Image (cartoon, rainbow, N blue to C red; front, side, top):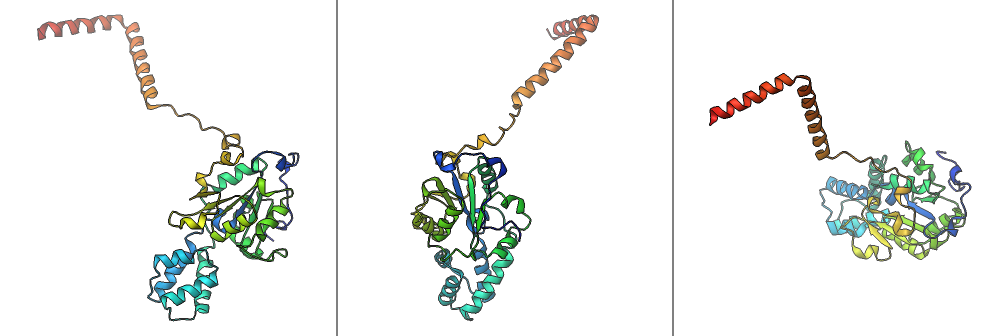
Length: 299
């Protein structure tokens, strides 16, 4: 396996002496959805659907792309085939869609801001959990090359986990993740999810949730969210009583201003001219006489 058993919680050595996290005010545990909060896969299905549609000379309208966003893949394929009158059965379309998305998602980019946030939370001994709609083998494939980053998470809950009985929008996935984090309670836990079903699941688990959604996503999808952001670059830990970034990051060195640089350059030139004048007083007197002569000629 790519990591130690996903369902066995592990505490970072540096946090072994930390007090019970929920004894502290604010958020002490965070749970991230892999596909919508860690990886930026929001365009994957849209791109795959558009490409498949064009291969059958069909243009999928924008409202169908938005409507299919929160659906399971099978439900999405059936809707697109029915509404766009695809010349193939939806089951075959589903197979082609899964194949294309697998190709596109083989090496997905990280969500902007997530690496900084996860690193910061880990240094502050915030318990971190990861949930994914992928099987354990697919999860290992998705994180290949980034294993060190994913070691930051204390526990990982995959779709084929033996304890998981129902997927989102049922709250099971977040309830199990909190149980595996130890003494995590909804009041001191925060979820990051980018799907409507994920927000519903977190809400039903009584956990506050930050929804990561693009501007065109309908507002009613995020009605149950505690906070809606476009990316994690906009997230401020202090809003949830977590330590600020300044606690784990060194302040950036102050760059010298352009004005001060020019001033110091001028000062150096003045000093050099003064030294030269002191060394050659005769030249200085000659220069003064020349200046006086030029003034008389001009008059």
